[in-house]
Amino acid sequence: MTSQQRSASLAGTREKTYFEQQREELMGEIAMSFEHVLANINKLNRSLEAVVAVGNEFSSVEALWSQFENVMAKDPEEGGSGKSEEQGGGGQDEADRTKDEGSDA
Image (cartoon, rainbow, N blue to C red; front, side, top):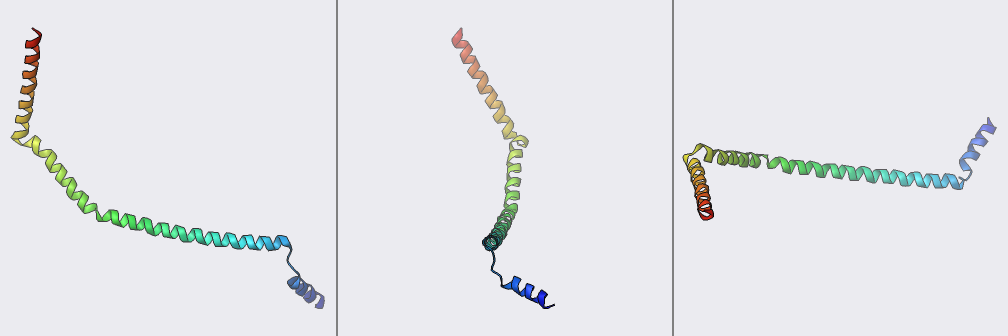
């Protein structure tokens, strides 16, 4: 038993090789980098949640403008003034064509 204890104590006190030292340093750097990545991902997630929250605040405004747009789009079609403008516009085109035909003759 004493030989096992000696070998265990020797293994604990022996110096680490250059490879083992470099591996531990690199593993520590990798662990730190992963922690930074995780922190940045969490920060990005919070920022995206804030953007979505701000966007959701505008949903009522968007609905109101959409309703306004729909009302304005239906008004000329349903009212008599829209039809008279179309007829007046068509009459103007016909008058222009008559002038062109008269100038050609």
